[in-house]
Image (tube, rainbow, N blue to C red; front, side, top):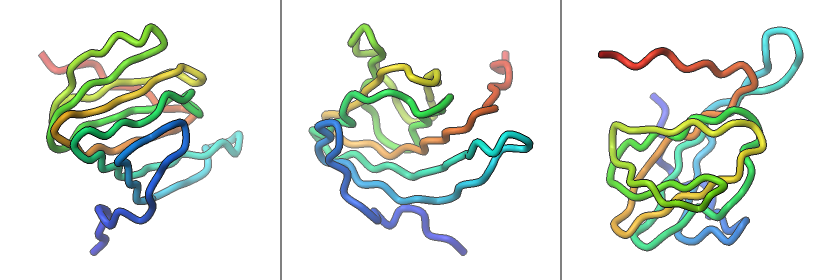
Length: 118
């Protein structure tokens, strides 16, 4: 058993507020040594993940609660449990919430999305 919602570390970089993170896993790429990284994020009510560039292709998957995400244009788009967003390497992005949410963040150089189900 592995408890992944331990709130290992409070994150304040990039102006983040109310953000805690737990590292879950990391690995190396199949041939080029680039790594993958998986983390559990918890954002408290009124919290924000500060604007920062994606280190690599990234999936941001909301598990519980609701909030918003914004890309380089800073336009806030609602997001809720069961939804996710993909950020490209280097793409500036941010997220926040009035009520709180938890999410998984998966970064990996060869990350590919499956086609949406109909």
